[in-house]
Image (cartoon, rainbow over all chains, first blue to last red):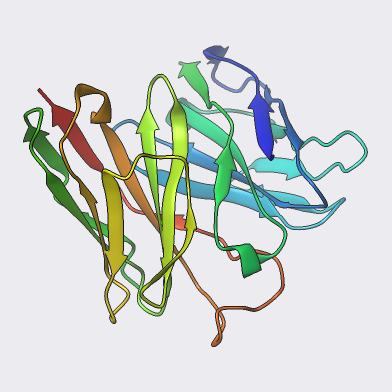
Length: 115
Length: 120
């Protein structure tokens, strides 16, 4: 079955530091890949997505590139802010929706940015 | 457009009781999925509804059930609550094609704020 593995946290950084959160996946075919972010006490917000190999998703300074050869979708941001403190989830969905919608999530990575 | 809304936001129940949670999808979205989030198990898929039919189901006991109405609003029900059912329950909606059987990449799922259930 499908699975997603992401680095365990917490990741503690200073403001303006570079952030990388590793994500690798196991799936049949080429699924769509997502990064969601969860702020304290809230639901999940879509951060970015990529639907095919070599696609780069980007939003709010965050980027991730769909790497088929390494089955990875690492999240990066060049200069984090305190407001980026949250839990980040990597997720994949099955290639075709004929089987219905279902996201498979990684365990989440808590990021804490200190001023 | 208004986002996905879930009610209630917080709920406290005792063991053995049952609970019903509600989800209103983004206008025009016809697919609604439910997920359970716990510190120990993370985010787990419960089920998905499209056009009032359950299209996909996760590995949860039969105490967990759901339904979808003609206006795409969905409810999930948990009967005979157990302590381990304490969790954040998240609903997500996505846009589907006219037939719902479009064979292409999955549409993005948009999540609501969740209902936090505490079972005592």
